[in-house]
Amino acid sequence: MGGVAVGDPRHAAQITGVPRPPGGVEDALAMVSRLLEAHETILAEARDAATRTTQLGDGGTHDLLSQLIRTGEDQVRFLAEQLVVTLRTGA
Image (tube, rainbow, N blue to C red):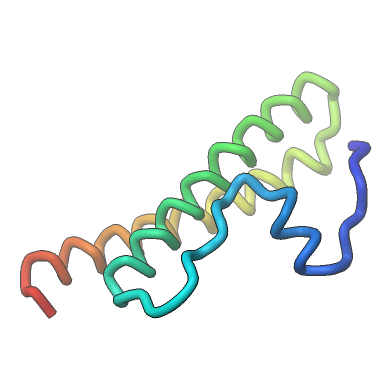
């Protein structure tokens, strides 16, 4: 698939499409909202990559990405449900 292997978390954070968290204190609702947005960003990139692997005939990588997408979709549903509950109850 090409690309560059990044082993240092600081370097990985610099090249990701997920924005860095703000400095200082952040409330839980804002954190979960950012986490949900990050998951959605990663899912969009994974879907694009899965499409490319299909076009390239790379079935193994497509299977890997498909599993990642299924797991990520479950996580997005869970986070979204938690946000709805929190907003409704004010907890």
